[in-house]
Length: 543
Image (cartoon, rainbow, N blue to C red; front, side, top):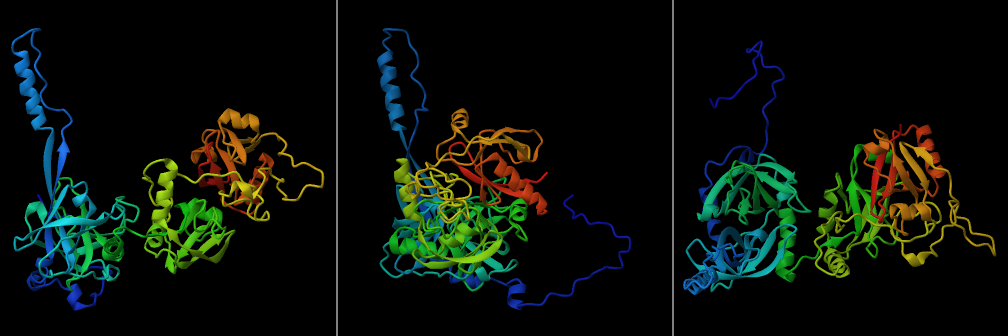
């Protein structure tokens, strides 16, 4: 029991393809003989965070016993249980975590979840000193908070290092307060980088096998120079204790957030103002990309930084401010880390060609506040694409030929006052003098890739509850087992674009699909609108 299984070898004397010895920095490849000297200089900067809050019981105390009417004991029982339940109506709940001094004047960094909802916060130093702490600022998106204590003398502080220089296999050291046992030191290595554990919109965790347990949250993860390269935040464990899978917020993300919280008491993140979705293999093929990379723009937020047409729905963002966007989740993080008001170069793929556009970033928090006001309450929407909301993009009333007919309204979010609400037809020509613009004439339905498409007229709008802001051709039927069914398309949804071209009639949609087949394409990219105008892009296989 407990042995290591090995595969049998037909010729144990021969080891094929033996790898040569790996050479490198001896200090980093060899484990440290001891971290005692390193730890002794850092322990005084790591504190225990003790919090307390009053929690109101929700009436789960014992009920008053039932007694006969007019019983002499009724009044006694009423008084007894009333007093007993009122004594327990508010309970004081305490919790423990870790933190570290980042500035000698008394600024302390910890996790937001360590102090969230606390009525009282106290920092306990290794020498036993207890100082009341006040909350300076917190950021739920990265689970970071900054506290401030008022010491009589300057405190011993640590500084951030550069987590981007850490390699898988590098040695790290964690110090914290596991299970209330302050000043505990553990050592391990960087097990992985860039981990996404779905904890927040900017997940980019360092994974380590250094022991991290309950109470370590908010404590520092050091490199062998004594620099903070991570903030211990989470573990994966079936038992609640360390099994060697811990996660730390990297300093390359945390340092900027902490500085903003110290300076302003809040974050000030860059905002691009687009809604994005992943680039799948099918979508990449339909767009002519070599591989599935980048972030596909599903919509542009009205009034946002790129509402001027510099970036449009259907574009694929490949690079932002010199940084590659390998997958969708990279974009929100690099945008958020950028300064508000900065002009950046964004490399996009549009109509099969790469081009670079310049964008001046807005502020994410301003968009959050506007969304909260518009919804009549707090905004809990996440950041998909540098401030992009979890809610899908929506179409607004628009003229699909507003850009000269080249892109057919691909941005999907155009001000209602940019046109009179009538379409000129697919050719974008002006009507003759004295002629009134006409809505498209109803056409016979077309079968396209397992969908029956029909003209979006008043009858279909009423039948499927389709908003007036939605344009395109309506799906009236979907054949089971078809390419359209495989992508989850449903009757009542609207095909707005095929291969980045607006389609106003079933015939136009069918002709575009036929054209793609003649070109040898395997998939057709489509912009799909729900009845209320929510947008998404899909790639449907060309049968």
